[in-house]
Image 1 (tube, helix red, strand yellow):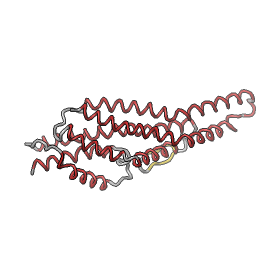
Image 2 (cartoon, rainbow, N blue to C red):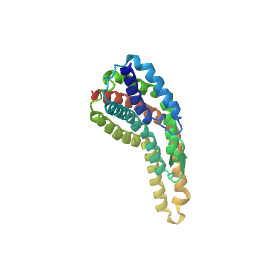
Image 3 (cartoon, rainbow, N blue to C red):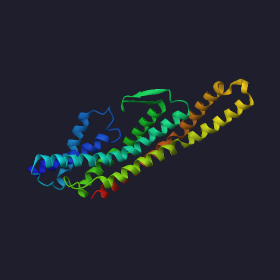
Length: 252
C-alpha cells in the first residue's frame, strides 16, 4: 500500500510539472483548482498500469525523487511551449514592421503587455492547440513515459535538455518563417514609398501616405495568409509532441 501511495505521488509530480508549463493550461486564466483536480484524476486513471516505484527509506529520498519527476515534466512541457511561442514571436515581428508595436494590449491570460497582433496570434494559436486536441496528446505521452522511465527512476535530464535547446532554435526559425510573407510585402511597400519620396521630396510622402499604406498592406496580407500561418504552426506543434517523445527516450 505504501508503494502505491509513493508511486501515485511521483506520477502526480511528473504530470503537475508538465501541466504547469503546457500551453493554454499554464495560462493565468486557467483555474489552478481545475489543473489540480485534472492531475489527480489522470493519476488515478493511469496508476494501475504504472510500474511501482521503489520503496523510499527516508523522506529526503522521496523529496529528491519528486523533484526529479517535476523536472522531467517541466522539460517535456517546455519543449511544446517553446514551439508554441513561435506564433507570438511571428506576431511581434509583424507588428514591429507594420508600425503597430506601440499599440499594446494587456493579455490577461499571460499577464503580459504585448502588441495587439502578437496577442491575437497567441490566442488563435491557443485555440488551434485545443481544437487539435494536442493537450490530450501531451498528457497521453506523459502517461506512456512511465513505461519508458518508471517513477522514481529518473537518472538524468541533461540528455533531454539538448532537445529543449533544439526546440528553442526551431521556434525562432518558425517565427521568422511565419512572418516572412508580411515582412517581404512591407519591405516592398517601403521601397515604393522611398522611391516616391525621392521623386517628390516636398510632398512628405512617407508621413502622408507611407505609414497608412504599410499598415493596410500588412494587415491585408496577414488576414489572407492567417489560415495558412495557423496550419503551419499547428503542424509544428504536432512535431513538437514527437520531439517530446524523443526527449523521453534520450533520458533512459
